[in-house]
Image (tube, rainbow, N blue to C red):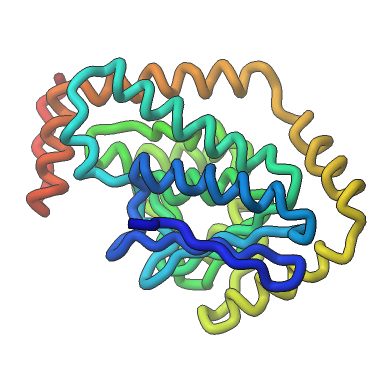
Length: 257
């Protein structure tokens, strides 16, 4: 089954996440993002990429069911590091990547969106990192990227409460660039992509490289620590309870161990 499709429309590559019903980010789906980026990077006619989700959501998060097949903290840490590498590639991609977010971008979905260069949202979209409500922590660099966009205080609020913000609030907080009614989202994303595609590919690539120089060594140490913590927390009894409660659609009862 293919989870990612893409087609070129003029100078724009439109990528679509296709993993109903929630467009959950499994390891296989993340691998297909990597493969699509390979094709888009090699295509000299593509100057900008847009990534969106099919159906009701951009992506409602990581594939929780997949977590139940992983048993050791080392394998959880490896999964986190793998997702981090692919999302880092998105951020360092030599062609601009625009996330067009509708419905929800939660957990891994928001982590993917935060790795894109520009985020456009619908006004009523929900963006958040709900991992703590499952007894977990973000694993795909969410704890490191979020403060860069919204500041430490707002990042702490979003992370510790697990409560999402609306698309309109995301723009106000600096997490997204612009918010639109749902029917305008993709047309506006294409309009913006077309404007960027008119620029020199040489200078556009250089500008993206310069933007990444703002990231410091502490960021990469934080990402490494996040993957380690992802593995450690996932081996806790609280994490097992949180995952099971999610799958059973009930409120978890955390014991603190």
